[in-house]
Length: 124
Image (tube, rainbow, N blue to C red; front, side, top):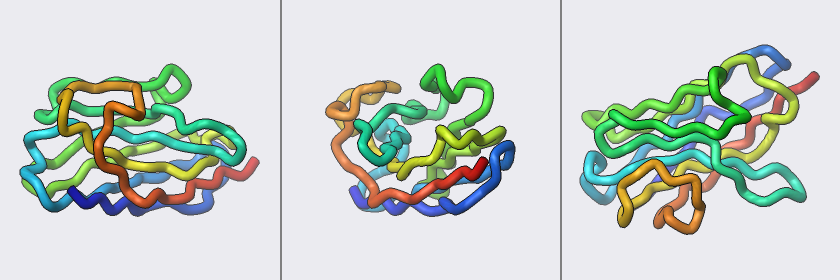
Protein backbone atom coordinates (compact mmCIF):
# COMPACT_ATOMS: atom_id res chain seq x y z
CA UNK A 1 0.00 0.00 0.00
CA UNK A 2 1.29 3.44 -0.93
CA UNK A 3 -0.09 6.51 0.79
CA UNK A 4 0.31 10.11 -0.31
CA UNK A 5 -0.80 12.87 2.05
CA UNK A 6 -1.46 16.42 0.93
CA UNK A 7 -3.25 19.60 1.92
CA UNK A 8 -1.07 20.94 4.69
CA UNK A 9 -0.09 24.56 4.98
CA UNK A 10 0.02 27.69 7.10
CA UNK A 11 -3.23 28.99 8.59
CA UNK A 12 -4.20 31.43 11.30
CA UNK A 13 -5.77 30.27 14.51
CA UNK A 14 -9.49 29.71 14.02
CA UNK A 15 -9.02 28.80 10.38
CA UNK A 16 -9.58 25.56 8.51
CA UNK A 17 -7.61 23.10 6.43
CA UNK A 18 -8.53 19.91 4.66
CA UNK A 19 -5.98 17.12 4.43
CA UNK A 20 -6.27 14.33 1.90
CA UNK A 21 -4.57 10.98 1.60
CA UNK A 22 -4.55 9.01 -1.63
CA UNK A 23 -4.03 5.27 -1.39
CA UNK A 24 -2.93 2.72 -3.95
CA UNK A 25 -1.72 -0.83 -4.16
CA UNK A 26 -4.49 -2.73 -2.40
CA UNK A 27 -8.29 -2.72 -2.35
CA UNK A 28 -8.92 0.48 -0.43
CA UNK A 29 -12.27 -0.57 0.97
CA UNK A 30 -10.71 -3.56 2.74
CA UNK A 31 -8.80 -1.65 5.42
CA UNK A 32 -9.20 1.05 8.02
CA UNK A 33 -7.43 4.38 7.86
CA UNK A 34 -6.11 6.78 10.45
CA UNK A 35 -4.50 10.17 10.88
CA UNK A 36 -1.71 10.82 13.33
CA UNK A 37 0.43 13.87 14.01
CA UNK A 38 3.83 14.60 15.44
CA UNK A 39 5.01 17.93 16.76
CA UNK A 40 8.71 18.73 17.22
CA UNK A 41 10.11 17.00 20.29
CA UNK A 42 6.93 15.02 20.88
CA UNK A 43 5.78 11.49 20.20
CA UNK A 44 3.46 10.68 17.37
CA UNK A 45 -0.12 10.93 18.55
CA UNK A 46 -3.46 9.69 17.32
CA UNK A 47 -5.83 12.17 15.71
CA UNK A 48 -8.66 10.26 14.05
CA UNK A 49 -9.53 6.95 12.41
CA UNK A 50 -12.25 5.55 10.19
CA UNK A 51 -13.30 1.97 9.57
CA UNK A 52 -13.12 0.31 6.16
CA UNK A 53 -16.74 1.15 5.39
CA UNK A 54 -16.69 4.63 6.86
CA UNK A 55 -19.36 3.58 9.33
CA UNK A 56 -17.24 3.95 12.44
CA UNK A 57 -14.97 6.78 13.43
CA UNK A 58 -12.76 7.54 16.39
CA UNK A 59 -11.23 10.83 17.51
CA UNK A 60 -8.69 12.07 19.99
CA UNK A 61 -10.34 14.12 22.71
CA UNK A 62 -8.27 17.12 21.70
CA UNK A 63 -9.89 17.30 18.25
CA UNK A 64 -13.44 16.11 18.88
CA UNK A 65 -15.96 18.57 17.55
CA UNK A 66 -13.35 20.33 15.41
CA UNK A 67 -11.99 17.64 13.08
CA UNK A 68 -13.91 15.26 10.84
CA UNK A 69 -12.48 12.18 9.16
CA UNK A 70 -14.15 10.74 6.08
CA UNK A 71 -13.33 8.40 3.25
CA UNK A 72 -14.38 7.94 -0.35
CA UNK A 73 -13.81 4.32 -1.28
CA UNK A 74 -14.64 4.94 -4.92
CA UNK A 75 -11.79 7.46 -5.06
CA UNK A 76 -9.33 5.65 -2.75
CA UNK A 77 -9.03 8.69 -0.52
CA UNK A 78 -9.42 9.59 3.12
CA UNK A 79 -9.78 13.18 4.26
CA UNK A 80 -9.41 15.10 7.47
CA UNK A 81 -11.40 18.32 7.69
CA UNK A 82 -9.87 20.50 10.37
CA UNK A 83 -11.82 23.48 11.66
CA UNK A 84 -11.23 25.95 14.48
CA UNK A 85 -7.54 25.24 14.31
CA UNK A 86 -5.34 26.09 17.28
CA UNK A 87 -1.60 26.71 17.51
CA UNK A 88 -1.29 23.42 19.40
CA UNK A 89 -2.52 21.62 16.28
CA UNK A 90 0.78 22.50 14.60
CA UNK A 91 2.51 19.27 13.59
CA UNK A 92 3.36 16.99 10.72
CA UNK A 93 0.25 14.99 9.91
CA UNK A 94 0.48 11.40 8.69
CA UNK A 95 -2.10 9.12 7.20
CA UNK A 96 -1.82 5.42 7.92
CA UNK A 97 -3.46 2.16 6.85
CA UNK A 98 -4.54 -0.60 9.23
CA UNK A 99 -4.51 -3.83 7.22
CA UNK A 100 -4.59 -6.35 10.06
CA UNK A 101 -7.11 -5.17 12.63
CA UNK A 102 -9.65 -3.26 10.61
CA UNK A 103 -10.85 -1.14 13.48
CA UNK A 104 -10.39 2.46 14.50
CA UNK A 105 -7.34 2.00 16.66
CA UNK A 106 -5.49 4.81 18.42
CA UNK A 107 -2.28 2.76 18.59
CA UNK A 108 0.37 3.61 15.97
CA UNK A 109 1.90 0.12 15.96
CA UNK A 110 -1.40 -1.33 14.78
CA UNK A 111 -1.01 0.53 11.50
CA UNK A 112 0.98 -1.15 8.75
CA UNK A 113 1.60 1.55 6.17
CA UNK A 114 2.32 5.25 6.52
CA UNK A 115 2.31 8.23 4.23
CA UNK A 116 5.14 10.73 4.06
CA UNK A 117 3.48 13.43 6.18
CA UNK A 118 2.25 16.92 5.48
CA UNK A 119 3.07 19.96 7.58
CA UNK A 120 0.31 21.91 9.28
CA UNK A 121 1.27 25.18 10.93
CA UNK A 122 -1.24 27.25 12.86
CA UNK A 123 -0.18 30.77 13.77
CA UNK A 124 -1.57 32.63 16.75
